[in-house]
Length: 196
Image 1 (tube, rainbow, N blue to C red):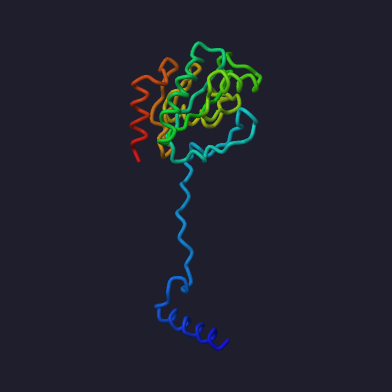
Image 2: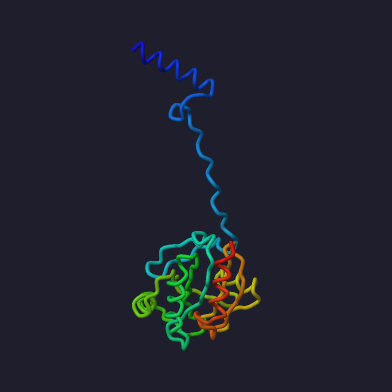
């Protein structure tokens, strides 16, 4: 007991003098880095296609985004394949493709299970897909309203694409006829990914 008390007193003296071993010194809590701020563009939540579970877009803060309005019965529907190839190529570098099915152009099913089946089973989509929504005009969801305002371009058809940088700033808008693997779009994605 005497040894334990004398050891404690010795340690206390070392702590007071600032000479105690690290294990004995009281540890200050590590300063936590502030969480990446969520840009205004991403301060929205949308239900996930496969189960309607709400998904906060803030989880994608700090990523390069390619936001695409999709449809199941469109001449551009095979672009799902190119989008998934783009996703597979660049996801580990920070690209996230966000798919928003819409019937604004009368080419989407009202059945979420059918939409999900086409995306996930027919085209093997692995990027996030959300429930059917509106992307144009006064009924457009808030994300699409902001994208259209920032770029001056609202979707005129299905598979319109918006490229957004890591800070949440829309960089460019690409029409439906721009293939996901076109040199123009791939170069813009690579440039956005390279910027820190």
